[in-house]
Length: 375
Length: 214
Image 1 (cartoon, each protein chain N blue to C red):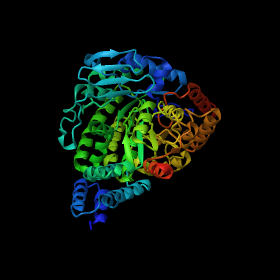
Image 2 (image 1 turned 180 degrees about the vertical axis):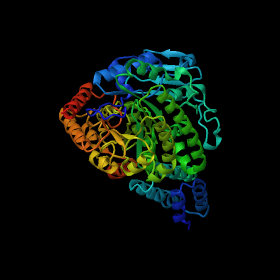
Image 3 (image 1 turned 45 degrees about the vertical axis):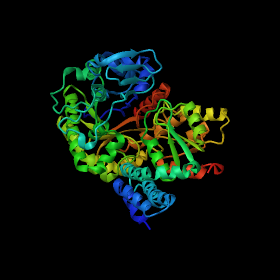
Image 4 (image 1 turned 120 degrees about the vertical axis):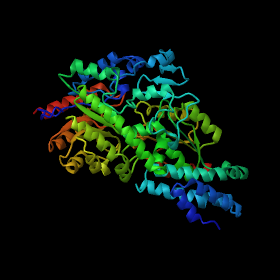
């Protein structure tokens, strides 16, 4: 990722939070709130699997979130933060964190949103929770407070000289859906495309500011988390209208900072590889193979024709979670065989490594990659 | 005679106020409730399902069509209940399994299922085996549909299936789906069917709904 051709094919994966929690044995509330602990977890997981890099998928934990907590149930099956506005944040022991709003929580309709303050309607716990997911309504890379980058800074300080540390931002469309809600957001694209575009344009500013700020703090690359831009959700035409111009603007801003940027879009994306390339990103992550998606790595390499790098595409469910050694070997050999035909390939799980994926499977994938590409 | 082709078109385009208006007009003209349901709403939704399956339309279009169908159904429902039509409708209980809060796939299946004429009982997210059992009993459901997006929650599908077997409710067919779920996994856990997406799930319901329950 530093612009030099690596001696061997690098390996690094995006790990589900649950996978890290399970394999580090930390408490999920501490994991959700403590920058030191989380940075330590990210570094330990890299060591466990001997990855060539670390994805710091959020820049840091939310400063002062515990000031909003009225009560903590630390020992429950699902440890929970009970917020002072009646909502709660559930920190699961084997998965992600979930926001459970209070009974009064109502999302605004599209025409009720204040375009100049898209979160003006939201309770403070929701704003804090969205901040924990890197939805920060700040449009100036210099406008963030230091604590926002509490985890990224620690990881870079500790291992940035030895390993490639990547930052991540939510895609502009992802912010949009999180403000309006999934179904209302998707319908809004048809109900009022003009207003939807205006909102996505503003959330693009948020993504750009956070991406650029992370680069300036030492992140080697930026990943765009764009899980809802695949054909499971949007048509290619809608991709062209609601995704491409905005992820394109984001890509341009990061490239102007001199670092690469890549997109992670889950599921079936075979019909939009060209559109993805047209955003101007440096690479694509994921490329889920069947049955999760529709990508055959050989076909994808042929279609992309060296235009951008690929980070993928070992099936995280049927190979890394449920597969045996023979299945892992078969897939890794096939993928690396295909990747021989191109520059710019990082071996990785396609989508995130599932929480219960056996660590031995992960280690075997890395070992095989070293064996095959060190030759 | 109502212009059902136009009503289908409005539904397809997601024009909820138009669908609602035409539903009211059709009833005011004396059309049979069941006819309006079948010809005006279900026929329109079946085109939506077909086109979704063939990637001619995508989730947003399905959602606005389902919203239009709902507008028409809101007019018809009181009358259908008065006629007792609902008691003879094939019933499907749907939910995401315990620990899983991701519901768009399940919601789409409910919308498409209703659009195909099934009575969909949506339990919502994070449902235990006991909830599925209780709802299946209460509503006399012939099928239970479960959805999971997470690899951590998909094993719970087997817990639900085992609970139905232990309760002697083998006559209820269990269908599963969700991003990490595959046909192979469905077979392994003893599910009666697997739907790769919402339209596939509805096709599955049509093919396996217990004949003696219809």
